[in-house]
Amino acid sequence: MGTLLSEHERTTLVDLLRVAFPHDRFPVGPYQRTALAVVDAAAGNPRLHGLLLQGLADLDTQREVGFSNLDVETAQLVLRGIADTPFFTAVLDVAIVALYDDHEVWEILGYEGPSYDKGGYIDRGFNDLDWLPDPRIESWIDSTVDSTVDSNEEAPA
Image 1 (cartoon, rainbow, N blue to C red):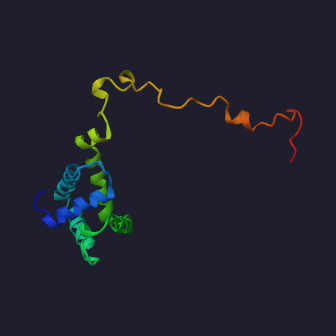
Image 2 (image 1 turned 90 degrees about the horizontal axis):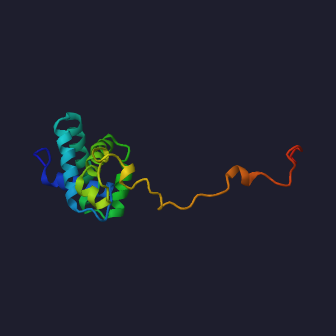
Image 3 (image 1 turned 60 degrees about the horizontal axis):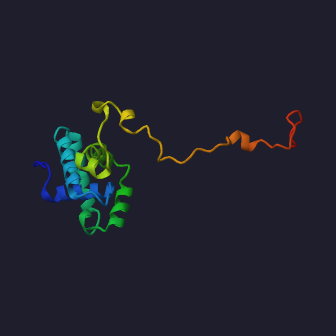
């Protein structure tokens, strides 16, 4: 992950990402690659680099144990507390794209990838709506009209 972060900072970043994007089925690899994408983005952006270094340091220095040693519930509370900070939003801006653009993640989630190079989705079975429930027959408007009121009379107030 480059020399921008120490080993401890890299571990903290990966653990932050695992708490921010909790998926039981994801191995550590996609989170490590996402952390690498964040570090790469920081390498070309001095502001992000500073936010990243300060934010990771703050995660560890504001409590008795380091962020990586927190249980999941406590770590989630910590992230909720920093949700609106420039550090966290900057990390998320890079991480959300990097994590869900990872082909290993696509495979785990069952996403087949973009369809433009395969002629689109319509001719690949995605127009088959058998998986949807049958639609309602009555409309909302029909069900709200009181059949006992003559349409020429005013409804009681």
